[in-house]
Length: 116
Image (cartoon, rainbow, N blue to C red; front, side, top):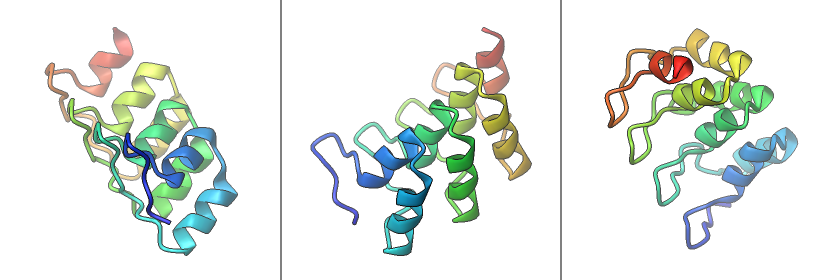
């Protein structure tokens, strides 16, 4: 369930990125680590956010994903939504406690990224 490839990608990362909600639910029910990070520090929530997968973001939030986790560059799921223009996913994150004031390694917040 928690196996990862050489890049640290797990089944939950793949399900999250591709919006496979039923598969993600099954993996979580079977004990998949919701905050498993790949080699670059990306969590399943970050993959879902980057791809604007609103249903997946909501599922991961309901299962208590770390909403303010950062990757090796200090990037959060909210910043990834901002970069991709994924308003609904960003809204879901903010409504559940994502911190819009966090800064990445370049000193940018999600708002800075959204308007860039």
